[in-house]
Image (cartoon, rainbow, N blue to C red; front, side, top):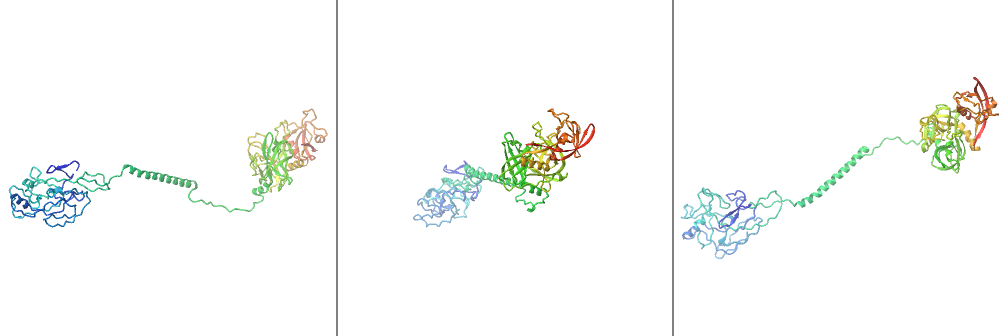
Length: 604
């Protein structure tokens, strides 16, 4: 209806629908239909015929049914009206389905009741008393039967004029233009007057819902259902968005965790790998494992702390009295007032003291007290060893206790010298050593080298390291093994250990000569003069008794070639004092063979 109104008779404006109206008055496109709020509706009452009004205008007798006078306000819709005095009895109202509508306005008197199409009452066409007479009364425009809606009047009212009775006529060409509720089509040439406009009911507020009731007289509603307020919609959507984000994060975390687990472990189920059964039986005694099992209980790790330095080495138990054999350079840092501690293979610890030591053989004996359950190692015979025999070295390289390595005897009677840090030669050791390729590293010094029956055949003492040049490392350096390890033969070590335990000092075999250590020729040359002015051949010594003179060059000892003065010392120290040796020498270009008995000297 947006701003469109039509002016009816009497100057009263009425709203017009926005769509084309149905000329036949069919709801909802004619008058207000069942979906629009209905205005007040009267109960159907008897209506006069058209001739009733005409006869009144002409002064004739009234024809048709007379209308009763107004008896007060109209009753509510659907309630039977009470008959006025002197009128017809009550009429039974037609059953009408009453739609929900706003309350009707106050009832109008009978003479002011609406007669136009906006009254929304049910109109019944009246028929003339004489249908055979088609001619209308002079001055009165009469419509065909069923198309004319007469104006209802009370008896005694002034007759209607022809102008009032004429139906409305629109257009200039005489064509009929229908209006809602005007009773349907009529002849094109018939002119009628519009019905007087009737007061319209006031619009009532309509409830808001998903779909409002359809009203063709109101402005169109766009968008269908009424949308909820923006604030409420946003409030409902926010929890959903937050929930979706949380769910996505949880799903991503769970998926990532499962993926990482599968990538790391290869699946969701635990992997069971096949494994051999546990073998509780002991190993073959001559295997490396069997040898280690037998020898490890008698091996100890030695920690030495002195005023100037400290170190770590290895040793092994000699007897049940607690004597332990090791290298001299292992315990030397302790000095006179240092501390020595011993750790057994089972983890027990004990303090130890030095019994005796000898720098010339690089051997020392220490002793622990108050320790029970000692397991001394069996001593073998180094003279019976053959090159290629399997050996096992046990020690604590770099303080890694109970380390076991295996190899073979690479050579025998390898003359080596070690030490010499003091510069006066007093700390130089001369050893006719066993060479092995069993890995020996710093910390292995003093540990046992055992044969295939777990018998000690040597004491690991020195290695040839890659960074040690042409000299030997006593194991105190940081050079690692390159497969060149040297051990003091157990036959020599046994004699020295006995002397150290029994007397606290060791004896060295000597021949009583001074050697020229700078001699570059083959053999060991006896010096022609001594540095202190004394004779190079000690009077009354073993060499003097055998006939050796200054300047002689010794080339063999017991048939073994000697190539230097160090080798001669090593060969002599490999024997005991009092042993008899056959010496071959060269004098004035001639070779001679002599026999001598070794003398003795002691150190302590």
